Image 1 (cartoon, helix red, strand yellow):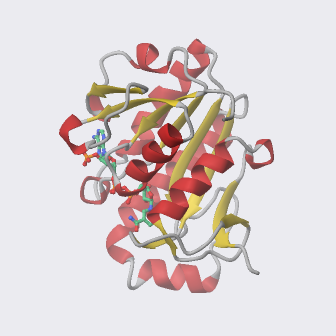
Image 2 (image 1 turned 120 degrees about the horizontal axis):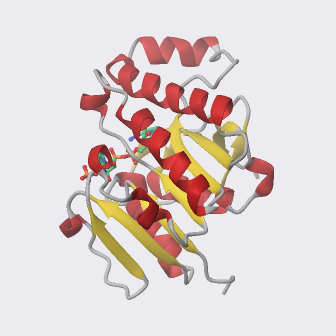
Length: 216
Ligand SMILES: NC(=O)c1ccc[n+]([C@@H]2O[C@H](COP(=O)([O-])OP(=O)(O)OC[C@H]3O[C@@H](n4cnc5c(N)ncnc54)[C@H](OP(=O)(O)O)[C@@H]3O)[C@@H](O)[C@H]2O)c1
């Protein structure tokens, strides 16, 4: 087993988050999770520490962050994000708490249709975002504001963004690699595995890459 690490997970009860928590525990690590409804977490593991709470009103973020090695957000609420940048507001509180607690490494899962700072989406991604995926524009705008904040105001931390493309909750379709231009439509499980590997990859620091299945 690798050296045991502690992961603080936001969005642990979500479609990517459940796979991520399961993998981290299977790999022998500790997981601390903030969830609105603990009953949604079906894992029984002595290394899983569950805190009940909501990102819009976390009573003591410093206490949650204290002592962890990695922080990961796989948060989403597409309906609320149509009107409110709830993830951005949360990340703007989380990053200072990480600084205060000396925790450096942070992965944020956004979407492939969210535009990274100072870049443009390819014409095909732009077209998809504004047609079939237009009901998620609020979520993309929230994710974009998170990326802007990280790029502009958190260069002292080891943040990384995964701009995931996800299509199903099916079995693994392969191994996802970082990609600047070509996104794959992946499974939640493969995205969670990618997040786990990427968090431990120093070359991913300060990137907002897409993920793409490795060929061959
Ligand atoms: N789903 C996709 O097809 C897709 C594709 C590409 C990218 N992404 C991106 O991936 C990220 C995560 O997506 P996902 O589909 O894995 O997530 P998801 O299944 O929608 O789950 C979202 C998670 O966020 C939690 N959450 C939402 N509001 C919260 C709050 N106020 N306080 C605490 N927790 C809260 C949810 O908790 P509850 O269980 O309590 O609701 C859940 O654990 C998003 O940024 C999304 O843009 C998703």
